[in-house]
Length: 389
Image (cartoon, rainbow, N blue to C red):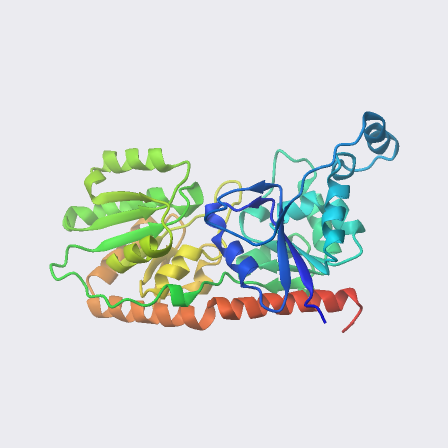
């Protein structure tokens, strides 16, 4: 008997910040999968054995006119995407489709509604925000939530947002970010002997919701009294130039290192050198929010305590007072106070670091995450067959 086949649909496979998706797709054990995408990025960084491009099949003018104006079919049909996706799925006798990101599910909604097999959609953070440039988007998102058998979220905050959008609570399943903790072993560390040379790290995409401007302000204040302190910012993104300029204005350019995107041994070596992970995320004006940041879990796995905000899924991974210290979003004074607390109490800093490593292994290890994901797939298949109803 062949294993069930799930088609993993991700429009762009794969942006650097989507490592968690790659770990899911390549970690399946009891299901076979292949990737469907429209755009292929970073193939050397994210290799997969089986990837199919979803390219619209052009139709002649008369057929397109008939479908669009006479049949009143949606764009996905008259532009040829519908038929192209049908062919990809039929060629592999797919049992289930997993659509990554809610906005992709909205785009594929006409297909999902007509396809006779089940589709599950996973939400990751930015895909729950309104889209001013797409009239009717929220209405279609609500429709999507009603028509699929199950939806997945990375955090309780995302679950709450879907509930606000009218998703039945019985459809929502937790699919937390999971990491291969064996790749991020806990490293032995000692507090700086001089009390000054504390090394802080933030690893993320350089965008507004990560709160990097707040990180720089708090670090600049901290550095005035501890000239040996260093801040490492690992990542790429559109805010790199403004952040470099902010560091210059604050007078800490020589103490802040922009490391670029790091992976594997380079990222582990950076975590090994550091003492604290800082990540003051915030909700942006367009309602963009975090799930549970991968980089934060990886840092915790190596034994780094966390300084962060009560935002998105962060409080679900960081236990305040146990594995790190949390403050409100945009609370510069609170973040600075917590940095002072940890750097003046080496025993507390050490205890939190050990607790962080143990917590991630217990709650966010990839093996458990894959088991949970495959159980959701099995449940969706059973629901499609009318089992358990």
